[in-house]
Length: 125
Image (cartoon, rainbow, N blue to C red; front, side):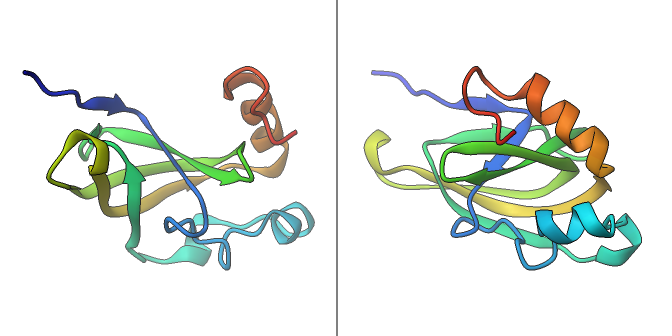
């Protein structure tokens, strides 16, 4: 018997899991870069990330990555405010939580970091 908890420095989520696609829209961002000030002090939530995971707690940063049909798109940095692991068995555990965006990447840098930091074959670009 034992337990398995994944340690993550990257919150990689889909729109369904809580990625704020309405605010962070790639087409809009490439035409008129979104600034951190545009987001205010908004706290975002994510839910139903499969498996038990621990993200770096604040004040340590995590990366924010949008999962678009399995492809990774880096957006910036966040701090994790709250983390909840739910489920009664290893097979049905999920992680949910709250985060605050602390940096939004410039569109040119966003392309670079996405290309170089995404796992092999998973870059959006």
